[in-house]
Image (cartoon, rainbow over all chains, first blue to last red; front, side, top):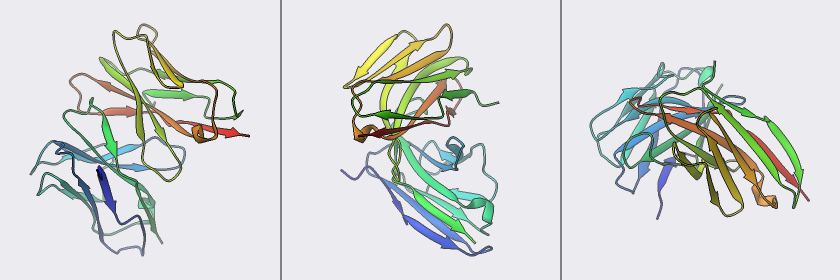
Length: 113
Length: 112
């Protein structure tokens, strides 16, 4: 059972480049999330989705876009990467609302130089 | 101000010893509180969930407590093992709010 899988695991970008992080879950969960985790800070919600075809902004959405074309996939895009977006990104999914258990991927370490 | 405060920020304990981690929150109205364990380089994994009516819950050597009146929770680790070295994150959810409040984590290092 794979659970939540993120690709890639590591990436280095130059300022201004674009990229897409892919998250896939095989648990048929309705809710999916993208978080970033920075040293000395808690996980911060970037965007989330409550079902296929829906997306919503979290607390730090600027500079990111997302899409949920298929229920099992949630994509996070950076159109023009900035050094401030250097972080570890986690995707998560949950069966129903946010107060149910979230299952996290292994993380993507992104460095923008 | 963060709605979830955890203490201590970090601690080092000897293998076999016990330790207690604290979580204070201001989230309201309260729905539930989870403790997650995050190993280095991995995503968080849920350890326990506490709802309003629960005071204590155990998962192996981990025991969580909740005092909803004072809005405090603790996670007690008994007879620590090297594999307990991790960050422990307190996460609080509220009714009617599609958000979770994350603490910054307690970094635990168990040494032989």
